[in-house]
Every structure is written in structure tokens, then in C-alpha cells.
Length: 208
Image 1: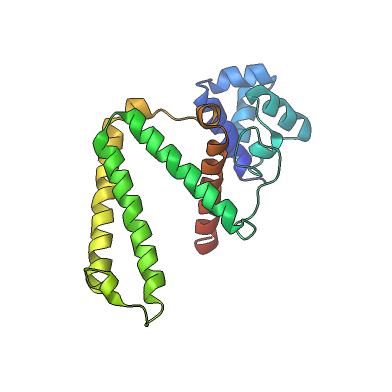
Image 2: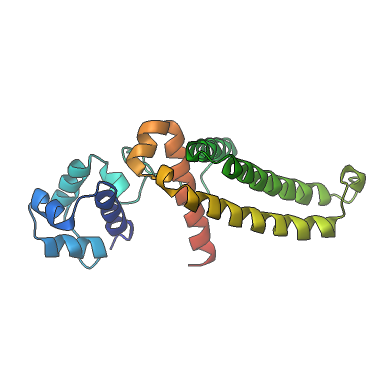
């Protein structure tokens, strides 16, 4: 049983604000059968897979969770196959979309907190790499390693709370769908959707 198919066909229907009854009628099946497909109780055949892909104007690969973007057809790479160069592109594109969405919210505080949270994470990782070699001079930094770890974690916890609060206050301007992302951000959206999939792959590997 493909675990992505039920989630994605439900997501596509709800993003388009189509009732389950209407989708079932359009697809020529009973609402009960569509409900079973969406809940993962039953698995559809190939004919229906093609039909529902055409209905939502997405690829079969996408509905099966093989690619991150709705209209992509090339099977996704596994986390171990992504090159460093591709990872940098995925992260860069995704961060650009974050700032664009923050800008749309109209909240300068949200943009500032996102920027601060990202910078602190980069700082923490750089300091880990720097500290790996005991010969590197700690005078590069103004605060001790212990303070750095404690305050960085506290700062990002606060930034995360502020980002959550500001986002919720701007919820109306942050209506997001896969179709809108793909239409507005083109290749960047594919990177963001790929980042989501790869991140969840990493999480699943650690917590199966």
C-alpha cells in the first residue's frame, strides 16, 4: 500500500476546495470508494491513478510520492543521492521563498525574526566546524562556547515562538497551496517541496 497516495489526493482536493462528494461524482466513483482511497483503506488501480492525476492536473509520480512537485515526472533522489551542490540550491531557493512569504504577510517583525533564526543556526553550525580543530583560535568569538550553546538555543526558541505568533496574526495573507507555490515560484517551489520531502525522509530514518 502506497502511504503517500491517500495523503496527496486528499491534499489536492482540499486545496481546490472541492467536496469529496463532488470529486467522486467527477471521477465517476462512489463517495464511499473515494473516502476509502483517501483514508488508505483501499488501493486504486492504474486506470484510476491516471484518471485522478488528469483530474487534478498533476503527474502520477507526484500522487505516488515519487517526486515533490505536482507536475514533475522524474523520480526523486533519495537523501543519500543529493549532491552538495544540489543541496545548496534547494536550501537557497527555499530560504528565498520563506522571505517572500514573510514579505507578503506585511509584518517586518516576521521577516526580522526569520532572518535572525536562520543566522543563528548558521552561526551554531559554523562554530561546531571551527571548534572541531583545537588549533583554531577561540579569540574569533566574543562569547564562550558554553554561553554560545545556551544562548543560541534560547534565542532560537524565542525566535520560533515569535515567528509562530506573527505568522498566526498574518494567517489570511499566508494561504498557501502547492499549485500557488508552483505557479508563483516555479523552480524555487520544486526546491522547497523537495526540502520538505528530504527533511521528512531524514526524520523517518531517525524515528521510523
